[in-house]
Length: 200
Image 1 (cartoon, rainbow, N blue to C red):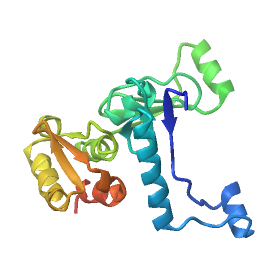
Image 2 (cartoon, one colour):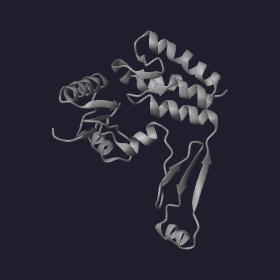
Image 3 (cartoon, one colour):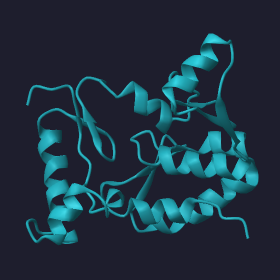
Image 4 (tube, rainbow, N blue to C red):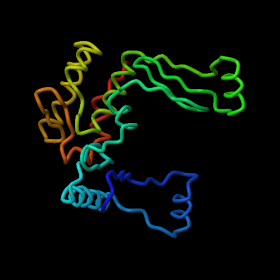
């Protein structure tokens, strides 16, 4: 392959999609979980041998050619979205512009913005940090967890990570970064669920 970046997502059979229709019509067969794990493991090995860095669960690149767009999401970096339906993020708020092109243009021509906004509380920000950063090679920055979300959520994260560290699904790098192991990639949804904080 002579490409700088590869995204390799596992397809799911969602109702209302073409692939779901093909499955229902018995024109394709669903891939069993064991085969799916084997295929993805082979992909990781093949791309690694070809010089690709596996920097996010579903993304591989050569020579630091990370997807800048997605890396901003994964690292929680603020971003500004321009245009109809575009989303913006500024650490504790998320905004999305009106979907209608006509309404969007009219608002801009009148020096207005038509958007909705969601304020993100501490728990939501923590959960989003876990959900996005754990997927990357950089992992969850534990020092940032304590600094941004406090000692209580930092301790919660450590406590919930411990069983996954003990069984080898998670690893700690540089005494700070909580990262998925190769084995952990295949059970990442469960790990993410365990690390997320749900208020009772």
